[in-house]
Image (tube, rainbow, N blue to C red):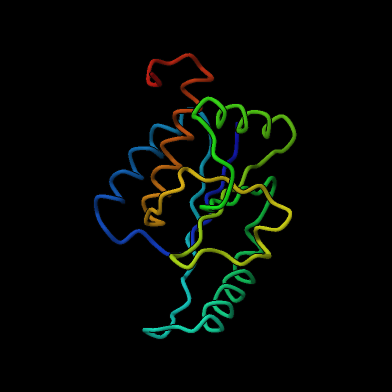
Length: 156
């Protein structure tokens, strides 16, 4: 069975996000094993300096390191964009070479440059979205990729 980790900085607080995630994880369970790993976001002052943000991202990087397994793909607004079919191809090409695929979603301040270096970075849009919404969008796109791969009517 395919194994996917989704490592997230921060937690889902709003019920509508929790419900959406539960639905997509249920749908995905017939295709793969998905493990969502939530890590605490570092607390910052109300108006953090660039130094505060950089130090916070470095602390989060150290905390995330043990969870970066298999092929690591970073969700980043500066990453490469894919169509849903191209994303499906990326997913299944990765599974040909790795036992596990780990997606990483940062906090509202992003992720440390150390996580981005040497790992694939993908973007769903040039627009800015809340990191919790990106998490749901990622789960939906993973589900869509499996339906495309298995010729299940969902993707149009």
